[in-house]
Image (cartoon, rainbow, N blue to C red; front, side, top):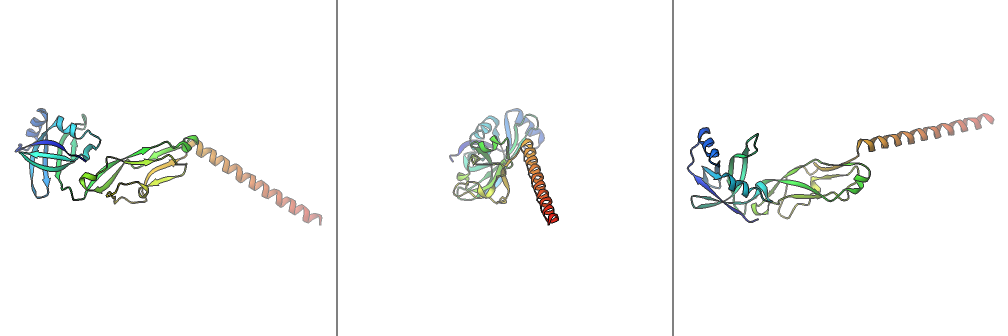
Length: 220
């Protein structure tokens, strides 16, 4: 993963009033920390930040953070957003090393068409939308894809079955469900009706055999 350069201005004033003034000017208050770097209050251009994090890697984009001419390899971590507008109001930048393993949240995407499930009017339930993984910063995948083509009603794809790239691991419970192929209410009702009909037929057949056996014994 190639990093994107983002310029961070140091020496910003702290406090809610100062932060509001920065946001009004189109800048986002931020903090830089990690790897022996003293935590520093900085600000970044809101538009440049949005562009940097709007690519295919999203918030896992590797950044070359330029702080007063000193470059740090960093990841955007805690992003606070405006509850109404959804814009970023504060961000924490974590300085990382290319050789260290870090944690990241990666989206889980479904690919393919579960035709067997569709034909039986079932539904594919996407239970786990994202996965916490561990990898080196340059090896964080953009997405974890799950192929649902061969799914049939009653099938479950679990974390242990996810095709993680080399060097990528997860501590999430391997038995946790990611995708479930479930029958619709109509399918369930039909199955229940068929089961009831089958049970009634078996009971009737059993009663007929008992009556026949009893009649034969009486004739003797």
